[in-house]
Length: 178
Image (cartoon, rainbow, N blue to C red; front, side):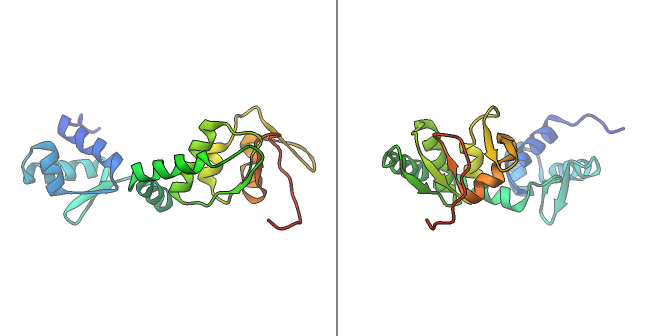
């Protein structure tokens, strides 16, 4: 049975939830402890399975996927500018439009702005799962399919491929081009 973590170790663990990897020097600054003390903490925390030591630092033992970490990191870069672009773009959208939203982080912020505005009717076509999750409606929504209805939480992939109609909350296939 392991011992209770110190406040310093708890601080290190919590910090590693927010960053993918940290150096010993950063942890010295964060905790105010000596380099030797931080290294001992990292050794003990690794034995407990809380982190993985790296050359000169540590990373969280349970890592998010590279795609998720990269998306989260990119979404915070130039955050204020992305929000401003997203808000300005959302102001240009009018009821009845059909729009295509790409998969970038600015596009994701744009989708959040669209959800806030509740513009209806609006047809959105996107390959971006983050956009679909943001715009995704509620669990009561059901989508017609060839074999009855598909609950909202199961139709995300279908919407991803063929679009999402906010007015009727329905999926539609079409052989015509965009």
